[in-house]
Length: 247
Ligand code: ADP
Ligand code: MG
Image (tube, rainbow, N blue to C red):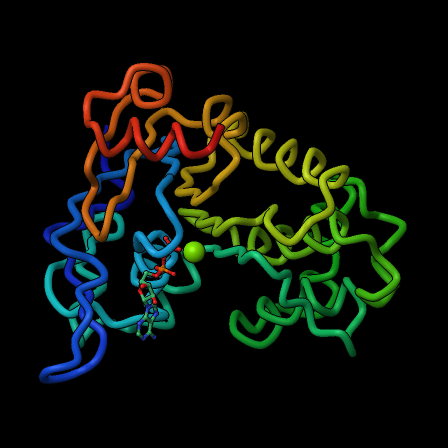
């Protein structure tokens, strides 16, 4: 199986001179096509920073990130072109409040990919229908529930047919009764073979959806493996402590 994503010895240091924080300290992470990798770890362990580095929202301090074999940290590559091949969904939905759902979803394909309005809208409507939002296409985000807004944000990330999807705590801002519908959508994507890296504190979801769970501890992948191994029978004391604190 070929690797979609390959992070080698990634370092991210914030600040300068005496006041530096090493947030990522030598991350090695390979994600194969169709693989679903779930990142777990305490708040501040570096999960969001890792995802933001992969999406080129942060510049890495050292190390390389290859997407489909191309080093996207090379300053000579077209970062925008690669960013379009990676879909990212955040904790807060980040939909534009002054645009309808349909306009939110079609903004990137029309502006960046220069697709025609009709073409962009047709694929957007198909995707919205697939996630049960066909009747919300012409509504503004504030008329949607949090779960519906998050599903719309996921559609917006999917509409460019990304090679890789990154999810950062996408259920954290949702009322508990709305979490399920968003997780179900991520499970559907998994069934469709989408390659994904997912940061979550929902251990039940991690167990269901992950091919591999990576436990991050202070910027290092302290332990990784199949969910049943990492979550039920962790090798590292640090992983055990983290999982204990959750119950
Ligand atoms: P997680 O998502 O696992 O909670 P983050 O990646 O958000 O962790 O944060 C890891 C650490 O990096 C935290 O200590 C945070 O304060 C620090 N950090 C994140 N972004 C910045 C920044 N722009 N400047 C300085 N420190 C940052
Ligand atoms: Mg985070």
